[in-house]
Length: 431
Ligand code: NAP
Ligand code: HSE
Image 1 (spheres, rainbow, N blue to C red):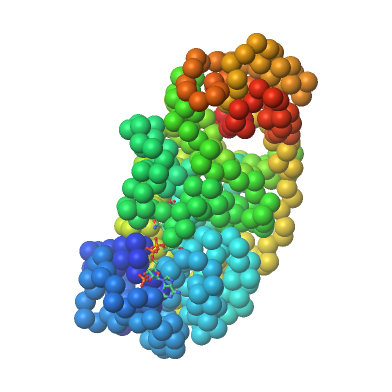
Image 2: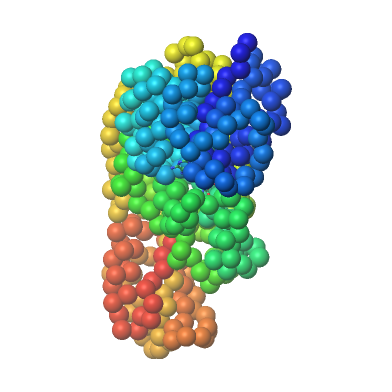
């Protein structure tokens, strides 16, 4: 059989990881697929850049996307550039040229998924995206195939390797935020714009993609409440530890009264939970189905080889089925476009909360805070005030019982406006 030729757009962390795996495991891959998979052309921006992996003489590098799109020998375009503009154009052009597409681009899928899936279906092309969510963890295939018969009750997980790396390094080694972020960037985990990682947007992109697969509905990205990890300080990590928790950036979605509640936020996770033990660039996703019950997937959520492995699985799937209509079942649901999600109002979400107030150390402060909480129906489970920590204020930490998000916001607004408040209140959910 003639080899399958792919056009690879992007030769950074993931693109070079993919090339390395194809080189390392080429014979095994050919045995499984029945023919070899070969990279024919690689699209990059900078033709002079030194690459992390050296390809053989048969691979041509170009900065012209037409070399992939117009080449009749290339049947699969693999988009690993990231971003929206050029990636969207390339994928659209690939479908119009009747080529299948594999992408790891959750940002693009979260923002423009519906139109790209519609075009793929119209052109009878595959649009596969295993690597877009949780790196090497096969969560897309799990939702689309393995749990296809279940109603998904909830999904909860750590879905960003960079944020998890930063929080883990701050927790276990006492590293400061910026140093940990730089390390994550050097290791190839972070997005080109790392604010997506640390402000929670990358996790929200993934959640948006996974909600479509799990529930067959479109939950607009703008409707997902997102809180990143930039407000997590070493002090919070220390308090969390003393209370028996570790802080993790979580994505969650659940059915509540027939509607979907979703969000991304840092949370205190009891240290005995598996999620609390997920360290470094690892991700973990717990999916609960109404038949299977809870299952947990755990693995590297970012990095060259883990992500390349997920990209390769999609390429192999397409290569096996290239002449059948199996490849056009991209979303896992027959209906296209997907209907809109019915959204449970985020302000009605109920959770326990951790509050850290930074206040002047004077008479009446605790009384004023507890009075505000009582007024808004927030019940206190634990309260701690530590001594002098420098600066003008002292930290006063309160852990609440289950509380509505709207009440938490009202308390924070009220206390932030009081004259003893030195810094705005920090509040995280508790799992
Ligand atoms: P990266 O290291 O920054 O590599 C991007 C590559 O794309 C580079 O080779 C760059 O060319 C090329 N490129 C970017 N814009 C281009 C354009 N307009 N025209 C031609 N080439 C262009 O990125 P990455 O970390 O591999 O990520 C790639 C994709 O995978 C992103 O969508 C990302 O979200 C996703 N992803 C990444 C990871 C991870 O662990 N890194 C995990 C899962 C998913 P030059 O090299 O010449 O600059
Ligand atoms: N920047 C992403 C992360 C890459 O850190 O998880 C994997 O999607």
